[in-house]
Amino acid sequence: MIRRVKYNEIDFEKYTKCLENSEQRKYSASRTFLDVTTNQQWDILVKNDYEAVMPVPFIYKNKVKIVHNPMICQQLGVFSAKDDQKTNERFLQFLKKNYLIRAYYFNETNCFDSTLKTKKNFLLYPDDYAKVFAKYSPKRKRKLRLDDEVIQNSEIREVSYQDAEVFIKNNAVGLDKENDIGTLLKTLQTFYSLKYLKFSAFYYHNEMTNMIATYSDFDTVALLGTFNDKKYIKMAGASTLIDQAIKENIEHSIFDFEGGNLPSIEEFFRGFRAELKPYTVVEHSIKKLLKDYVSFCIKGKILG
Image (cartoon, rainbow, N blue to C red; front, top):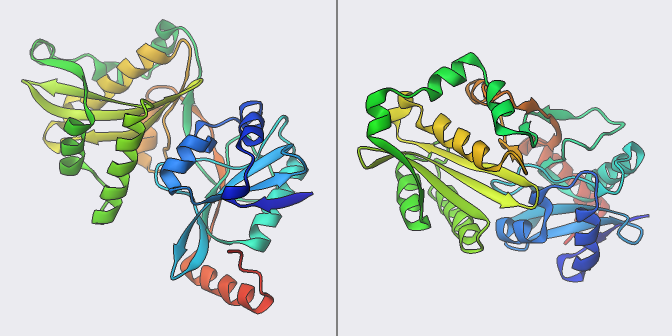
């Protein structure tokens, strides 16, 4: 039996145990990650006595509860000791029948009877760095061969949140709304203060030109953000930073590139010869959302 459990009713000990022992384990489903990214606005769906769990983040629009994966939370979905297609399908149908859904992203391990849209992600699995580097594409290797002048006048530094914030504000791409940047910065600052997040920057002539934010938890290092000064985009500072992060972590951790749907981004990540790992999504248009809202109101199904 699948049931909904509100945040203040969750047995977090059982939830965490189920997550940590699951075949699908994802850092983004942890209590800490979801508490920070959702402001504790998430329910869970539970099978029996926490045999399988599914976190469900939501937002409120005009006092209406809508399921929506939060910013920088790429994958959630069903977590269980062994991924089971029938069980996953039951969770999916429960979600669709009882919630208004704008965007919900499952994990790459979850499989379903239903046909769902997919998005792309790329992963590098633990291995000896020399072997990982040897598989890089010829183009990526060329990019990593910096000119002598650049080598002599550049360095990689770990930077504080304060320095990172200034650079992000000046160079963030794709965050047009002021509140989007504010939400991102607040989230990154919290993770940094909790020591989950690291900012690494590429400096050229003592000027920060590129920066990445990496999140570390258990067996995964995730690339949560890449920020570049457009003036230096051809100098390959971002490639150098990512390669350094891989070098430091790949022997003991999965390196999660966290995305790859845009052709330019996909090409960039493929250059590191990361493995394509598609994940399924449920996304509804505003028109479909309004239609579902009317239907739910008639049936009295809106969950508070």
